[in-house]
Amino acid sequence: MPVKEIIKLGDPILRKACLPVEEFSLLPPIIDDMFDAMYESEGVGLAANQVNLDMNLFILHIPGEDENDGGEPRIFVNSKIIATEGKSKDSEGCLSIPGVRLEITRPEIITLEYQDMDRNNHVEKFSGLTARAIQHETDHLNGVLITDKVSQVQKLQYKQDLKEIERQAMVRYSERQSGSV
Image (cartoon, rainbow, N blue to C red; front, side):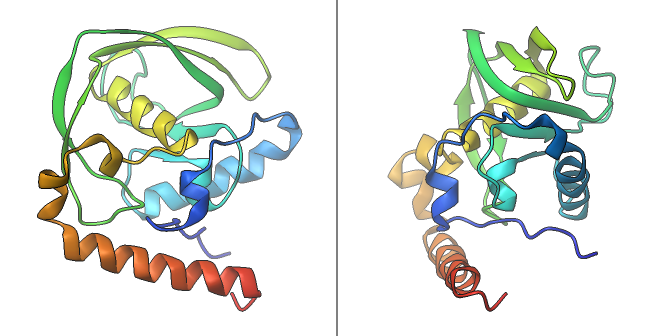
């Protein structure tokens, strides 16, 4: 089976706030497909809307990042950041905006409320790359992209790349809407 396509900048689903997951029994094959797509694209995180699914779900796998995740693949359902601390600036890329890296300032430490695949509720604190990746994926689930978090000046260096990504995304979107994909 082919790996799910990563939706690119310009596709309307990336600008939509995703709906809560209610039917957890549907998740296992979706999550398997998401991990396949993320690994194929060499990413560390992936939100459901990046594979054209309108649901509050994202995955992460940051090998050996810190004691919070032990480097294990993680699944977050119906997540919400409930507290933040500090500030940190770092370069970020995005599977939906290939070839673009932007300097993004984010909170350094976050507290996340989420559910696991068994509907269990969790509240957990994260820092480092894990906290940054969670914020990045949470932004996706809220229709926010890294290009929204920087100045026009910072985006200028990628102006042509961004236009081309959007053009190609709209072609793919039109193909999906017409059923030709």
